[in-house]
Image (cartoon, rainbow, N blue to C red; front, side, top):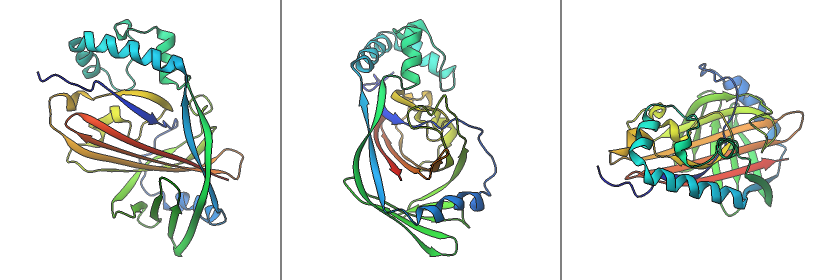
Length: 258
């Protein structure tokens, strides 16, 4: 087997705990956020801060996997994400749980940047976030999809429910997630990339078994839009992961809109 250079991928992942809905006819419900966003003019970019424990735990886990990669491959093949704890990972169960639950990381406000949400048609909204990492897209409530300024279309993926335990970093919120995958592979087969998983975890993610022996090129995109519990405040979370030759190049932008 070809040696895998990159075993673990550093990512910022926002998992959204709640009941996943299979109903794609969510246009009316999705639209309840957008008329509120029309009144907002500022977005705050959010960045993550990592503790020293975070890097120490990741380093131990990485070394353990490198030294026992065949076991690790079987471990990931036999378990869906999130995989259960195993002492072969080289870290304690408490360290594993803290890593998976984002306990070593905090979110801090970075910059206030211009934000606009304009109604272009009865059910069409155009959103622009400026700043160092600009984001521009159009939400079509009738089609229940998002079109980026690049022309790529993200389809409805799931409903996000409030959950205090797993949304402890952001605060409780509810909303909707939309996704795009530029590959003939099923999104579900790329579960380890968490394109629409349900927890809030920041850390190393594992290359999925389906990619270990394949030369795959794909781009995974997602946008989540939601409202914080009991507040007139909202969030927009954009994720972009380019996968090429078993390596991932992630890009994440999180914005709070008050």
